[in-house]
Structures are given as structure tokens and as C-alpha cells.
Image 1 (tube, helix red, strand yellow):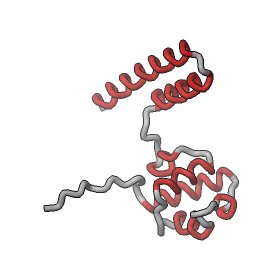
Image 2: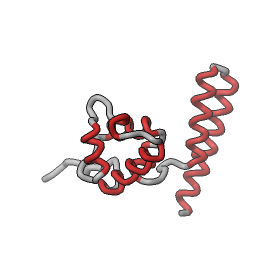
Image 3: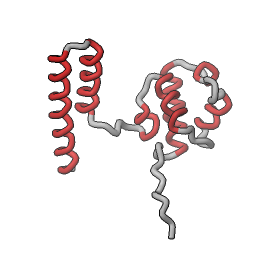
Image 4: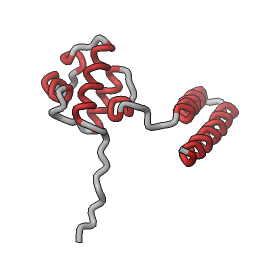
Length: 125
């Protein structure tokens, strides 16, 4: 009896991930060598772009961060989080950084409404 849970991949298709990485890297005007970092060489980036390798979740996050796109855009070609929720999360982060309790409370209320709306929309879709 196999009790292992099924793996949930952090990407949709290796070739598509490579194509998205290539396009985003070129759009950012960054060479493979410039994008490389310890643990992710230019040669490895080349293999990812050809669809021969899939980076770990951590490497995918760092690649996305370095080329200025979201991790979801790189992994799936689209955002996996509702845009309103994403914007509200950013507002919460900004409010928390500012340290104003009134603004923090307002930002969390806005986030709650955005999440509820996104959940309702997901049920309809």
C-alpha cells in the first residue's frame, strides 16, 4: 500500500518554462552569464531554456526575481493569484512597513474583501 502523496509540480511544462525564461531574460536585456549565480551557472540556464532541465523551486524563484517577473509567470505563464488579492497583499506589506496601526487594519480589511471576492469568482468560474 503506497501512502505517499502525489507530487505537485512547481511548473507546467519544462519546454514552456524554458521558453518563458528565455523571452523574459531577453526582454530584460540580461545575458545567461549575467543571470547566473552560485548554484545556477550560465550553462544550467541554457539547459533550462532548451527545456532540458527544470530548476528547483528555489532556483526558479531566484531566476524570476533577477529578471523582474513573478514566479507564477515563469512557472505557469500566468499569475496563479487573483490580481486584486495580489495588490491588497502589497498594500498590507506597505502598511506594515510604515508601522501605522490604522493603515495596517485598513489594508487587512481590504485584503479580506479582495480574498472573499476572488473566492466567489472562483466558485462561479
